[in-house]
Image 1 (cartoon, rainbow, N blue to C red):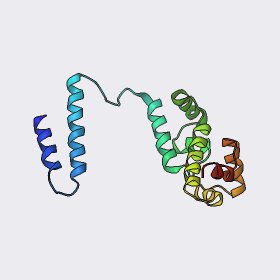
Image 2 (image 1 turned 60 degrees about the vertical axis):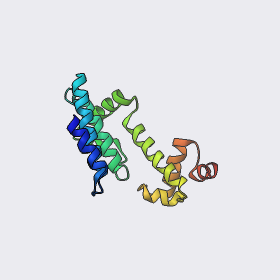
Image 3 (image 1 turned 30 degrees about the vertical axis):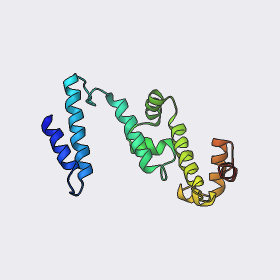
Length: 154
């Protein structure tokens, strides 16, 4: 462990490229050794299929939320049934898959609206079929139209 600390310190004081990443990796390694000494097992083994499916769903949603909007699309991409995906997501976070997808879309829409992007541009950015459909979706989820939301948060 002294060697790791020494390497991290030397790298921190150097002028080399990527020094921050190397220091971060050294500190991560040091943390792992400390956890091992405490006897804590941080292995992901034993978390089960459900945790793996939930994590895969969240990663997929984070990467593909603009193109995948329906539960059936996520289930097909993850090679599971809609019911199984819904059950596992509900067990993990207490919400349905469609609620999680909608919440993520609304969060992204709000972020874009707060940066000055028009509702029409947000609609196209999030791959809605037309701005009216986006406005209806936004109002259903938030209680405000996109323009009302923008006015409130200016």
